Length: 212
Image (tube, rainbow, N blue to C red; front, top):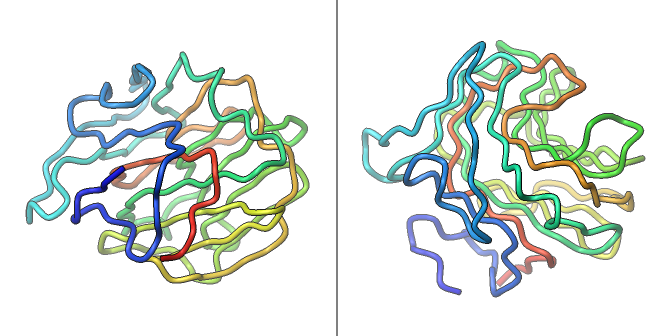
């Protein structure tokens, strides 16, 4: 699989094993496996916008309170258990220091369930990937004025965070990442969250991506 240069992983080899892809080029429908996104904008909004510099093309603009996008047919995907997987996306989030927990994506309901959730920790200010019994945080505090490529890789029970292709931090990550819940973007059922960011080229792989 070839990735266009403007969305390249900056030193990370993709290969195959892509389970989910949402570039947000056309509404909320542009995904693999035929999954269709549903927007819930009761208390806020999500929209597809065009980058003013045209370097990132279109992207998802999220500015919402406790709402999100759901992929209702995704329960059969992303059943990774304790095995390897990877998540990659481009993110621009200049205002995160002003808000609470910002959920990027979630496939779990609460701390007692299996599954995973990826969010910006309001107390630690870092990006966090959570599976049961493990919070894998970045070393770098998050305030992305410019577009940044974030990749989380779990390999052999260890979680690795990459920022623009450079390893930022690694820590233990052995929890069960499987969940029968639907995939949500910008929302977590347990938290009173504020999604406020721009998101592009979200990819989820059923294997560990490797450095080139």
